[in-house]
Image 1: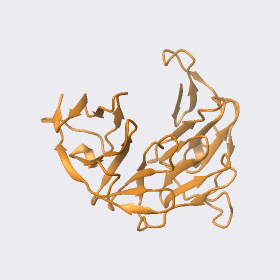
Image 2: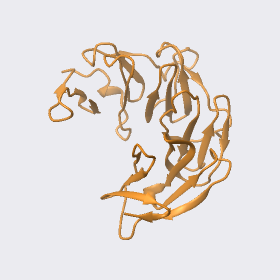
Image 3: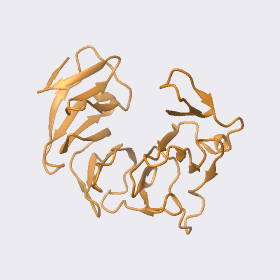
Image 4: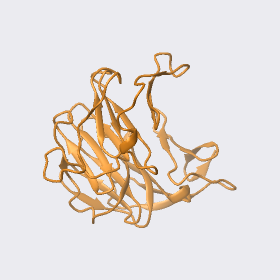
Length: 239
């Protein structure tokens, strides 16, 4: 397990029971925005390879013992350019995706270079990015004021309106999408990859959520949402 914070990168080889700080003097702390959470992604092919997002993207090839900067928000003409503030980092065996203050970027060379893939996003502030579906290039993104977007590998389609602070594909049913409005006040769902959508639930009674309510799935495809407590959603009902 890896955990990131403003204090650095922590690694656990004991299923989260105990963590060890990997770097005593973290090089990226001074460059991170005070209101930007760190993001982290580990390669499924090599657990030694770790990517960390702050104001830029940093990469470790030795399980967090050392870090090097791989994206440069201050160099707009560089192939390593991304916009600043790395809200999310996800990848698979072929690509790395990140969402930033200025849209979504993609790397196909392990972070050596990044390309913008925000065409059709209406210059939205992208706040969340779904985990990629195995064997597909599809993504779903949530934005602060421009709703949710489905990326089919080459272009984006907007399929919801307003603030969508989190959105995820159901890994058991890849055409099914669940999304949350701010604070999880409403749950939006789609069963056809975003071509149509509807509000499928209001937040649980007497509950409050963070601005971004997390979404996770059981192996059978059942969705779970994190408020003050963790709730399961089935057929529009909370348990």
